[in-house]
Length: 307
Image (cartoon, rainbow, N blue to C red; front, side, top):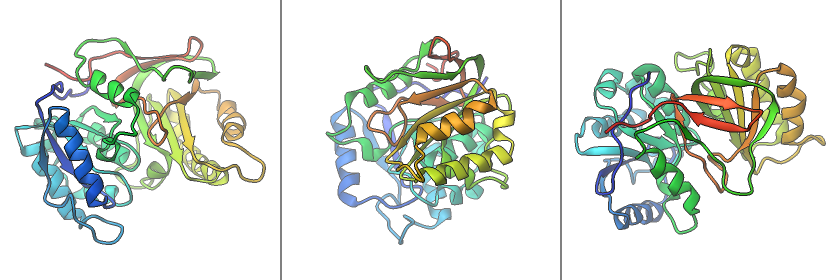
């Protein structure tokens, strides 16, 4: 079983880091103030407000901020400001022995899911595809916060990953499988193929979602994963939303799922509220999950935090 971080409670300390693209200073400040209004203490990394083109800082500097948060005994939750390009560049500068000895809650989505999966693979740490600092604003639905804070404070299992009311999970290929759940942003994982940090899907349930890509590009990336045998090795597939993904050549996201993924014959669930969408289900990356596509349930089979 994977390593569990300590459960989150109001009054705990949140460590803010920027690990990819920069975020506007006013958005950072807004998020910090909201966290403080919710009862959390906040520690800010040295390069959180930095900006150097499409990167916040150098890969070594961003990695240094992250490692400081893992080494800080007061920090219980590490919260990246945003995703964006560059997250994969910090990976060679991380000390996974230190991380494994100091497990923390780490959340995020988009390119941050590269980090979450690498933390599971190299440090055996459960992470959470969920909130970023930029989500701490008045427009974020309460569902997103409730999902995250429930998951990170619940020390018992099993429990359900559920969509918001009116957004049904869809069983596209029947099956009932259990395994560690991995994955996240499709583009991000294609970028790591052929490296020592590429996603391991063997015997695992693979979750994918995307944003702002035309459907022909989504097909290209799915086909790349298929040629890398990531679908052949996995136990099952969950397709989240493709947010603001425009149809191309008369084909939609649903068409690509039905014409490319369904014929693979793997247990397949679709329409999970994910990541770049307005509603974001919290998915514990690395945790054992039972996917029942007939009854359309996703059940987390082990505690994902500890007392």
